[in-house]
Length: 121
Image (tube, rainbow, N blue to C red):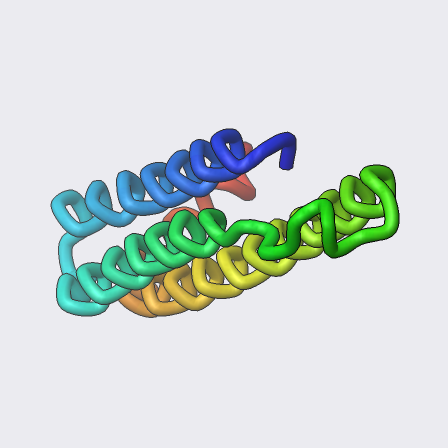
């Protein structure tokens, strides 16, 4: 990610997109397990909140803790790079879990009809 602001926008966009699709299914697919869909939406919102909150972590050392400004900048850059990779990986895992719950809420007949429509194209 380029920076904290862009990372937060990315997380929000992914979360909003997932919730939008889940809400559309909640209201438009007969036989869907509405409780499971609500739980999956809660999971997505929790993942978004967690990722946004974790992105606010700051580098806790000052320039004086290092031999030079160059060492400080290098350590800070490495810290943020590793931090955002970890937060993004955790976010992706939480979204995957929410999608598993969501997919389990969709009736098999709907899944089968979708597969037929996709393979017919």
